[in-house]
Image (cartoon, rainbow, N blue to C red):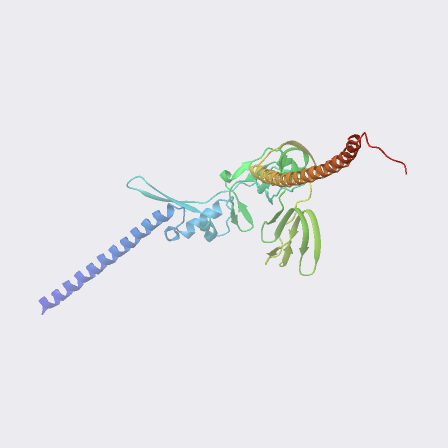
Length: 328
């Protein structure tokens, strides 16, 4: 009996050990799978939240005052991951951008076409403050109501250059580009940019005729501009920058490919019209010369016929010199 009980007890212990080993193997397999998945995701900069300790992230946010995050979830969303290894050690690194304490105004910029030309504008979005001006080359990250731009996404513009002077005032010496295009552009959900435009703009309760350059701010409405329809489902947030007192002088006219192509097409059209006009003129001149020659020929025939008969009469009279006439 005791032998049987001991055998049962031994069997139970062995089964428990097997289950314990199996559970450890399953846990190890799951952890290895997490590490492999984290490495694969880190190659594209995606953070694997299963490997992170939220308390450590929260402590990091509290310690670094320059980080603009309000909670750990927001920090993970804008963080990027990378994995490093020396053969025996595997290091998982979470990177979160730090920001300078300086603040800038984010501007959307467009060049107005006036008198067939506009200022050369290389960037459609800019950051400015009192001391610096940057052009945005690549998109910036948005965190709450702020935009965070990496240094590699910015191009610093000279403060004595054209764009900085146009935005902040002063004497601006700018390059211009010729253009005759009509631009109608929806810059964001609430802002419509028009330049070199002449036509009708029609809303639900208004209708106007515009001529020139305008920024139309939409407030949860639909408008018709020319033959195009634009709809906004948001309230307007964009504010137009007040004009700066600037004296602008031209530093030259740059010919772009679009303008050269448009000029070539226009010249080809003019040459085609001149060719058609010349062809028509040649036909007209030929017909006119033919008619004129016919008229001259008819007149010449009439003149020669009128002169010929008197000479014939005189010759007849001269051929009868010995004729006698008898008085009755």
